[in-house]
Amino acid sequence: METDDMFLQFEEDLDNIAGGSSSVGDNTGSSSQQTTPTPRRRAQSRLLELERHVAINGCIPMTIAPGAEKPISPHAIRFSQAIGVCVRKTFPVRCLKWADVGREYIERLFVIDFNDQAMNRFVEHQMLTTFKKFRADCHRHFKKYSDPEEARANPPNALVGRDEDWHFLCDHYISRAFQALVGDPSRRLAEQQVQAVRRHLVRSPHKKEIELQAKLHEALERIEVQDRNHQALASQVEAMKKMIEDLTRAQQGPPHDP
Image (tube, one colour):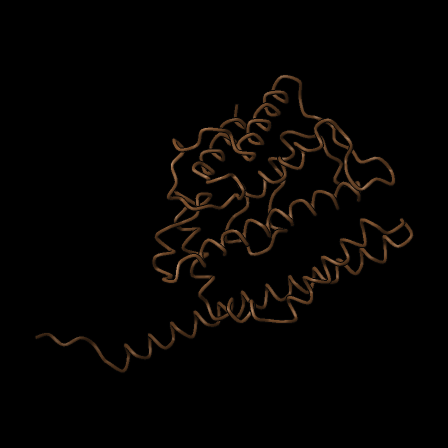
């Protein structure tokens, strides 16, 4: 089955994860050293069972009751896991925004009404959380190496075999634009505001939800604007480097025959 093939490939991407605590780990381990299933591998096994269930019985309807924040179903936990797989496996690493992640994998397993605002919020929250954690894990893996070239030669497990993607991230991490963005206090403030609003959304009564949701979207928009500015700056830097190289070659003139 197509979904089984897709997920088995994803499981291979996660092979050799030491301890199973992260989707991105050191690729120097060996699967033969593992004697007991890790929590992550048990989760992958449950998802494979879910895919077989769907293959036999059809997609699972998933809804959120009025006034609830999360779906209540025997498959609710696996629903969240499927969202995580969707993000880690299918989103292009070159996308710097979580919103570019597709939902095709989720929709192969579940029947979902994305016109339902509560369901949309839940799925988007799960996708954003997984996306940010995956990118943070990749950056954390990169920082383990003091030499950027050594980091390029040692991709995390989740990106083994995807050298082009990992090299893109390495170039992204050492760029001046990224370094400036990491140290930008306004970005950290915006992200803190997002987290604060999300905590309030969990605890607040329904009458405050609209106001808090507006604040949340405003903070997310600020982060996305900063990301777009960062990408534009990175492109400008690359263009300037190319101009300098072209000018240098022009000043040196054509190569002389010996």
